[in-house]
Length: 71
Image (tube, rainbow, N blue to C red):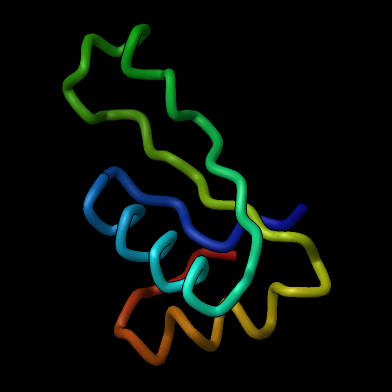
């Protein structure tokens, strides 16, 4: 899996997941439960991962919707 997006903004992650789901691209979210360690203050970024074969298409979908990708 390759990193597509890394952000502290939970709404950005939700929007990106909805866009990818609508296009039939599978994703996996990492660092979801880090809030237990950080105290739910949103300091630790979450990462959205996709399989390598979908990376180009997923990145294009996010860019088309004004989401800055990190991968």
